[in-house]
Length: 398
Image 1: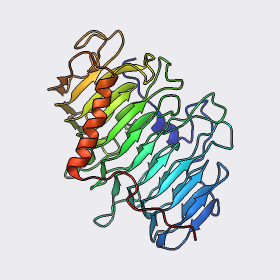
Image 2 (image 1 turned 120 degrees about the horizontal axis):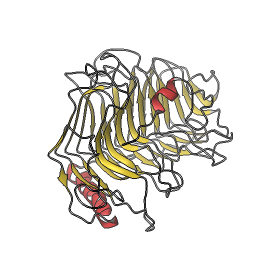
Image 3 (image 1 turned 30 degrees about the horizontal axis):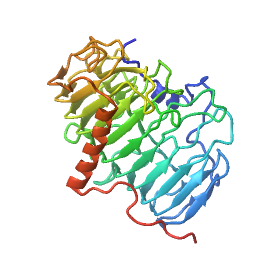
């Protein structure tokens, strides 16, 4: 089936996991299930380590403004959990996921937030986690009470289970039913996933999530490399670099008012960028490069296309409309593909009607072409004087 779509969003809503559809509690943790439980606002630093999958490193259990600055977080469970109404800033923190202590469970998220009213995640570095998840929003608030994810460095988003026979669909960033929120910015994040050391689904998944007509949800100037099945040589995969997603059948609840531009998606299985649901979605001036080869020279067989626009959930025309994909640069190897050259599929066959002005990279697209995207990213950072990851040293443990 075309550019296959994940069901990660509704599985999360239902409390289910793709691998075997098992029960999976994400946001029902009891007070005290963390190394540090924050009940008062303020700025917190230090080193926190959890030793069990069910125990977070830090749990924010207050609506007062909380800043985590320069923390070092290590554990097999969620590193940071934020409860309803949280006003949380996470900056200059380092997170390391550890192997889960429970079978059929992945490592936890770096940040796992449920109905926050303000969330800023900037200048952090984290590895071997299941990324950042934001499940719903507390509702419209004062100016500045929005979602900001910038200047983070992520390595190996990893949904693999401990017993290595399955996995959970994971994302660098999953927005689940974060709706009609103005001022959202997801920018200058660097995500590198290595084959056979990670298991990511959509690196960025916008599930039933939306900005506003006057302030679209912005996803810009991010660099994502790697979206692989496990094992990486498998020929089936449903992940992407970026996907608008969601099963909503009404305009109010659907993904919408999204603008994604000047991103780079490299070595992504299935697809680089999909519009699988929603309205008023605008992808432009992005770069999608996949060589069809793993770093060690093995063939990467799980690629499908660079760009795809398809109404996966069969939303009515009053919900799935006004989507544009314009002026993107694509070189996407799909073995057996045919557009615009042999073994290429820069646009999904019969599923890219709104795509216009695509700039097709010349053949062949190789590992060197992918590496050139990394050089382009480094030049962009230097030109714009942007620093990725923590910009201060971690503070000593108290």
